[in-house]
Image 1 (spheres, rainbow, N blue to C red):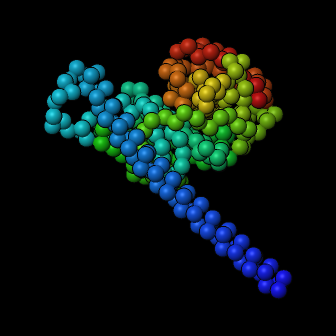
Image 2 (image 1 turned 90 degrees about the vertical axis):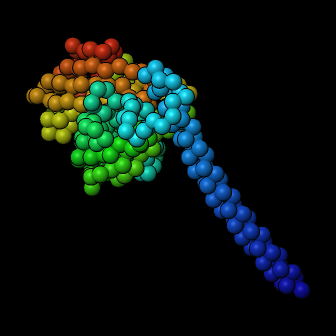
Image 3 (image 1 turned 30 degrees about the vertical axis):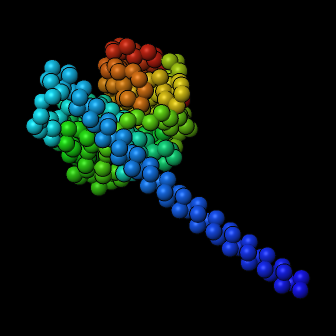
Length: 282
């Protein structure tokens, strides 16, 4: 009799546990669908505000109808979410596009520089050691209607293929240890560096090509500033252009000249645009 009672309790427990799992999974699916719907609504509201701001900047009445928005390419600076799960922080200066992209898990991170011609962006990317992948390659992107996003045209070794411009999240991935790189090697400066401006710099050297992503002082889930640099190394000299990207709130750009003083020490000078750091250590 005890055995029958025990078995009955055991089967009831399994049924209850199974019911909880089914309910939990259904609840998760419902929340996920709700998040997708909310994301779509947020983007629609975001783009409507972007269009309104564009008309105000151009001095055009918001009551004008029949505007061919798809023929207009506004400034593309802003936050984009991609179908590779990544956050992308894009800066548009003249005909040049810069970005820093990162996956929240830290599995990869990259910088990009390209040129805008009509509705096409052509450029190249380099992974940086805020992530664990060390790739690089070319990318060609098509710009969506009124800069609503990008679609990949070519770039087989790049994971993402669709980017959507939307509101920047409140909390973004913080600094992390280097995912790859070296130390004690003057010939290769790839790695995680710390600056006397309080910044963390993830530098990648490929041949004489040098790029980086830098960020500083997370407050309420965002860095106070973040930038990318892109340029070349000639022997011990570094010749770089830099630009803030909208992961942080700074909005400057300029040039940098640096010198690799030793295997784990770089000095920076002749900086323009208000760049603050002058020394980096690895």
